[in-house]
Amino acid sequence: MSLASLFLTAVFLATVSFLFLRVYLPRWLAITVAAIKFTLPVLYFTFVFDLEGSVSAGGQVIVAKAPAFTIKDDVTYYLWSRHVLESGYDPLTILFSQDGMSMLWEPVGGTHVFYYWWNLLAQYLFGPYYHSPVLLNVFLTVIVGVYVTKLLYSLGFSESYSNWFLVFFLLHWDILAWTSVLNLKGTIAMCLAVAYIYHFFRLDQRSTFSWRAVVFHLSIMTGSLILLWWVRFYIIAVLLATTSLWLLYRWVPRYVIPILGLVGTPVAILAVQSVPVFTRFWETAVSRLDPVSLPFGLLKVSLSPRPWGVEPNYLFLEFAAVFHWVAFAAFCYGFARLALEHKPTRYLFVFFGLLVVTFAMSTRFQGARQRYQLVFIIALCQYHTLRLLIAHATTTTEAGYPGQWWQNT
Image 1 (cartoon, rainbow, N blue to C red):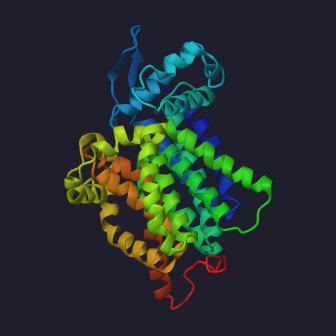
Image 2: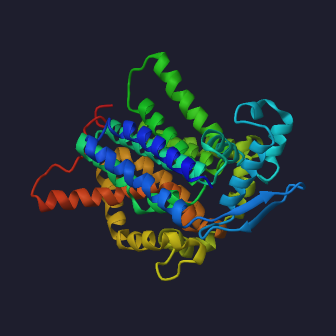
Image 3: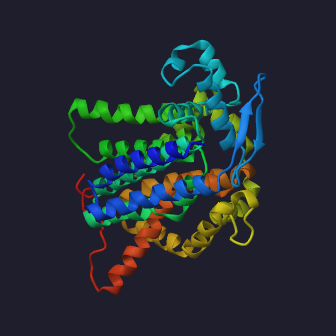
């Protein structure tokens, strides 16, 4: 590992992050948030991280010395992408090389090849080091935060509410814990999902649009779904299901819904049999779900890991687990208040509910790692409770409630 590369990359990405945050936050606060986010991984990689590994001539990933915190996938992403880079490929040329793409695909064992390419991009830009994709993911959380802030704007929340949520989200314990030490694809999956949701709402809440705007928003939505196919394909099915339910709820008279259900059932069956994304979702996810495990699975997805039972490789989550348990009641209260009082946020909660139920019925996906990609919704609920408490304590009625665009459309 090169300390010079670590510091230069961190300073560069922290500066770019500051420029993004400066649009929404005072200068001092933007500097503080950016500094905290990038100082934590710099400290970890300077004083704790230790990894030695390579890829053998036969294509076997060999780890001679593992870092303190690892779940194996993270090391494989890094070492294999470094192997591809050392073989003479870069993020652009590999897209036009059959041999290069075959090499990139070799360790995948599924469709999530995009994150290997993301690792290749990070190492090409910032050096063949483990910290390169980690720091790039830290920067990506800033993009996610900006997207959610703009989403809150579009849903009618006040500027103060939205901007302070940006701070809360970027310094959220789960965001800091997961992105400061591990090279995982949850952040990019969250970013793509948030991008889709934001641009969908931009289309949904406006009655008039230029064709240019329609094409732009649809292009981002489509691009997000395409990339999600190569990251975590099941999120596509959940997003499309959420969007379909939302459009029914928003625009279709209640008496028409049963008719659509009768017509839609055979269409859904046909889609499962013929449309690749739904077929793969059914074969690899839905068909393996066990409804019997739902009650226990919901508890596990909601509360794992236990603060007193964190596995050694996940000890970086110890403090985050404590905060998660302490703030769980705040999440539940904020969830209920937003869902009951602010109709536009119900889209987020339908998406959240469908994904959590899917995780709960699959014993493979009941951990904090899967829940992490929903942190932007969890943090919003916790933050909303905090705003309500502050509003109550200061005897003010302004808690940043949404405006009336919903009722006026």
